[in-house]
Image 1 (cartoon, helix red, strand yellow):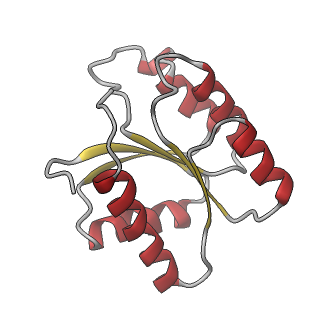
Image 2 (spheres, rainbow, N blue to C red; image 1 turned 90 degrees about the vertical axis):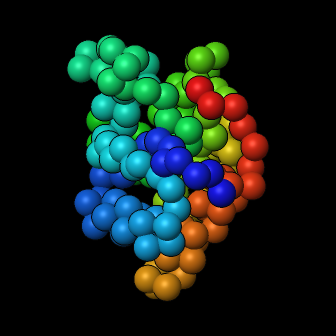
Length: 147
């Protein structure tokens, strides 16, 4: 596991789900700093360094993106498509974290080069274990370059 906190962008419009992600990461001592953004357009502004996020010093690239599909303003598949279409961003792992088990959503996600597609479990304990596994795999075992 990484020793210093790394930046994880959480793009999630449901405040309760976002809080659950943040709290379970903290409870498992996963060394992250969560940047919570609640809509797809703001996520793209941040990632593409537009508008309020134009300064690279105050808007560092995330190490990983946890992305919901059903987002206001710009949906998750469009965010994914934009991220994987930009040479400066495409190496950032994008993990879809959604309630959707629809085959079309899964297909669209992988057609747009998602790194992983995870369905949010209903129970707290299962959700907590999923967050722990995400932390261990993507932030510990998986090797990638810092952006």
